[in-house]
Image 1 (spheres, helix red, strand yellow):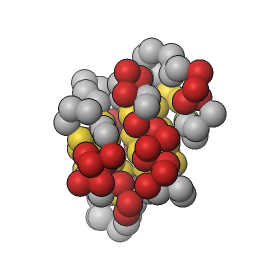
Image 2 (cartoon, helix red, strand yellow):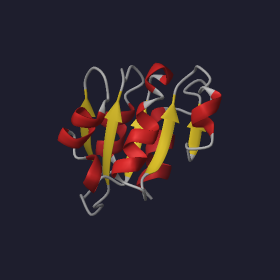
Image 3 (cartoon, helix red, strand yellow):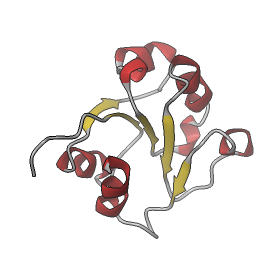
Image 4 (cartoon, one colour):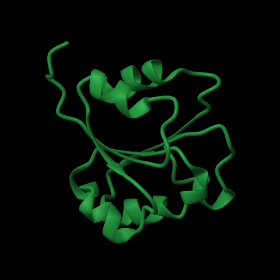
Length: 112
C-alpha cells in the first residue's frame, strides 16, 4: 500500500493487539508514548500536530483532557477492554473493545 495518508496519531499505553502497527500499515504516522502521557510527554510526542489520540490504557484517561487542551481538533480513540471513567466518556470520539473489533478493522476506519 502506498503511503498517501497524511494522518498522524499519538498512541499511549500498551498495544498488545497491534493497533499502532495496523495504523502504520494503513499509512498513518504513529508516535508512541511510553509511560505516563502527561503534558510534557504529549508535547514531545507531537500531539499538537496529531489528528488522532489513541489511548489503550483507561488508567491514563486523565491524559484525554490534557491532549484536547493541546490540540482541540483531535479525535480521541479509546481501544481498550475496560470501561472508560465517566469523566472522560464525553471527551472520547470512539470507544472500541478489542474483543469486538480487531486492530486492522479499526485502523482501516481511522485511516480512511
